[in-house]
Length: 226
Image (cartoon, rainbow, N blue to C red; front, side):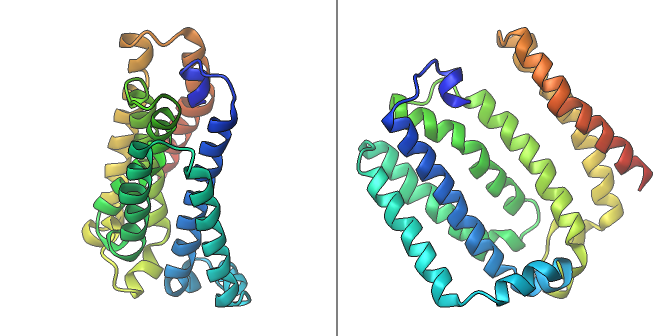
């Protein structure tokens, strides 16, 4: 998507960037699954059963393999891109999993920003600058933030037993639901601004309506019924 928006051809550097993005996020998800074993034993017992069947030694080996491949691919990146990767993105993933995940809203915003930063990181990698991907970054952040808050709402009981202070635990499930309804309405309006004010073409509105707005409206009715 980034290469299309930037009018960049598919090339070797873009493929390396895709591998680094997938393995970095994969690494973050592996760490997240094992950091959540206690809460997932309540929220997702099937997942916990599967994780307990995997030897920790094998998981550590997989993590080191991911890091090794990330390092190999990043040798073709410029200095600025590697600074962002090794001093911002990877440390942020670790901080999220071991500290900010338990904090209300700030953890949700951090992981949402990391997901949205895929657009910024791709532009930085292939063009060595960030001038065009701010809008996709912001849209992805908003959509991911909705998902993260809903996920915390779903994981309420396990997170509470683990003494975490997520947003639903801090302000209650009912208030979180109200907040989600308001945020969903605001996000639905914000998502149309690239077409209205930033010269995004009609194809953007077609895809936005079918894949984003209609599911959001449907989820809004579900939230109202709760």
